[in-house]
Image 1: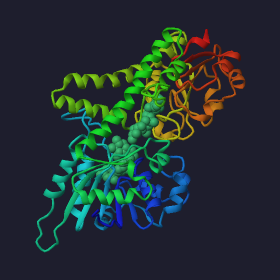
Image 2: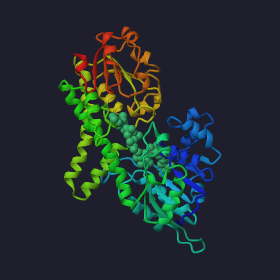
Image 3: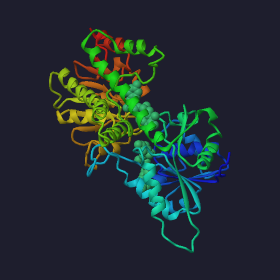
Image 4: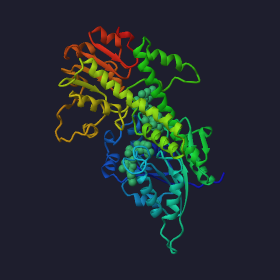
Amino acid sequence: MASLKIKNICCIGAGYVGGPTMAVFAQHCPNVKVTVADINESRIKLWNDSDTSNLPIYEPGLDKLISNCRNKNLFFTNNIQESIANADMIFLSVNTPTKSKGVGAGKASDLRWVEASARQVAKFAQGHTIVIEKSTLPVRTAKTIQRILTNSQEINLKKPKKSFSVLSNPEFLSEGTAIKDLQEPDRVLIGGEDQIAINSLVDLYTNWVPCEKIICTNLWSSELSKLTANAFLAQRISSINAISALCEATEADITQVSKAIGLDKRIGNEFLSPGPGFGGSCFQKDILNLVYLCEYYNLDEVARYWEEVININNWQKDRIAKLIVNSLFDTVSGKKLAILGFSFKANTNDTRNSASIDICRDLLEEGAILSIYDPKVDIHQIKKDLEIKSETKDMGNCLFANSIESATQDAHAVIILTEWKQFKDIAWEETIKKMKKPAWIFDTRSLIDVKKAKGVGFDIWQVGNQTKNN
Ligand code: UDX
Ligand code: UDX
């Protein structure tokens, strides 16, 4: 099979996707020089910090990988121009958030950074370059990238002509398990038309991924598969959250229901945990993208169908905030509430679209005093997410706790929003002694041993399961 020998890879975007993905490429392709380039200077500084506990993102196993490969065949830099010029393969892994204004605001993806990166590639690349979409993008973006690459070159007869092949190679990693997902992917998807470019990328992946797991499709199928995979996953969570509310209203227990349906091979047992609503940078954005696409093609019923997945997700967050207020005698004004967990899931410091943000905002709106503890999320990030402007550590109705003990001291309730392991076995007997009575636990992640906590005197609400409390 004809292919190009790739010696230099560049990835534009040193984020949650670009950083870990390139670290795994570097590990398995020791003869390839991998450069991750980003416009953000402070981020690159952290990627280059000799103390790997300062890496800009927290991901189990990443620090070890970085220590092994960095400055051998893995480099982090702000010099985008040089990295592009040296590369024979370029991954675009910049962020593509939902547009906040203009046509498609609130639904379509903002492609300005993808476009800017493509223009940089067009300008600085040399010879033939394979350009790969890693960011999740709306269907047919590859075509746009191709047009930018071919049309925005300066006409200069003295310089050798450049050429490009565009491929789509969506990333399916899940934060918190990114390294494992990258090392042992369920599948690798490559979309494109240029067989030599496809073979060149396949050659890299086969260094660690079995051939039968590498699937090649046309460009648009690849782009649409990524949106569809995320839409299906998010739909499962909205489905289980919807049933969790029904369980609370009846005598059913969601963990039993999940187990019973998950044993059906056709359904499968993963992604059936109820929670406070899904977060993360992808699910909402990708569904909104899908909705926008369906509307564009006049498929209104299909658009409404997928939109409902987001509506249920918002409803779940909203109903949890409301039931907390209702349980605390219809007012939380001036009451201290311990918030345990701020990241959108465990094992990451990422807070993008975290359910904690909306729930905390609603409680602050009701006048609660929140004491927030998360083992990995930085205080500045929490302030940014809750739009707290002050420079000081403690601010107004928000306190930032550095342990479970200080968060729960004098609190009326403990609200578990992220499934961090350490929240599973809290010393409830000690904890309740320092809390106001009646002391409540709101467990949105089905994490705690209800019997134990109830035994020492807590009132408990656990998502999808009110049976053990009666
Ligand atoms: C990824 C995907 O690329 C995105 O499509 C998906 O929906 C979310 O996950 P992620 O790696 O999580 O993005 O984003 P982020 O952590 O924000 O990293 C993007 C990086 O690109 C940032 O560090 C940013 O500074 C950089 N960037 C952005 C550039 O280097 N150049 C630009 O022009 C724009
Ligand atoms: C997701 C996709 O899983 C991944 O394939 C894609 O590349 C990016 O988007 P990520 O957002 O990192 O990954 O995390 P994921 O594990 O999918 O969790 C998303 C949200 O759903 C989290 O808020 C999580 O807590 C929630 N969730 C997940 C549940 O509430 N219940 C579950 O059973 C699973």
